[in-house]
Length: 328
Image (spheres, rainbow, N blue to C red):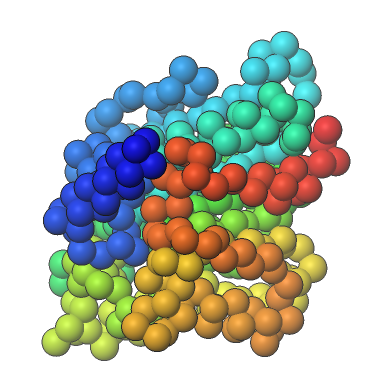
């Protein structure tokens, strides 16, 4: 009986998600009503779990007297030591916000307390609901995003290193992202291998322009998705795509970045009407000689963080435990 009720609950939840948004590439693991405005660099919702805090930081890349927000997890021992810690930057999915990172903080906190992995800092980025973790194609019709990449790389990362005791090198810095955040995690690590030594994409939207189900998710950052001007949008998208940087920086990535891809076998990013999007990207990395972990989760769809949160499947924390084992 409990199993039947549980299945009914999951079915109801999936139906609710579909009603609100038919593009599973950008759905979020938090409640659908837990959203921020499309241009919210500072989240108006300061809610955080007990083990995290809400913080602001200056964003001069956007102009004078501008700010962004983030949610940060510090290991319990942080206040009682003087040592430095690795940092995992969590990148939320489309229509998401910094609060989405709670699931990863929960998983890592448990692993630290169980002494499975060393203590780390986790920074959950407020990165606009649909920003794709790049600098937007400003001036193109419909674009409302901004210099998101520059803000993260030139403002946020230096701010974290200056205000917290971090291991301020690629060996102490990683990225984890879900859906659009997975696209961003791979993209930023491949473009900046000197900054990030580890990157993990969970159900990452490692798509081509035409694969996106909801055109507005493209318009916000790149410009028109169809018709006049769309060819320029596609050109811009291709020029910021993780695959572009994989080829451009292949040798640096091979030598300096550990890569992980996770996808569920029921996710359309695994099989989109016969197009195996994540497999294609994995094979592309193989063709460039970029070693990577590739895990396909059985009977799991796009909402992978939900599966971890309700303990349907175990979060594979070993990737991060191995990444930072030297800091134990």
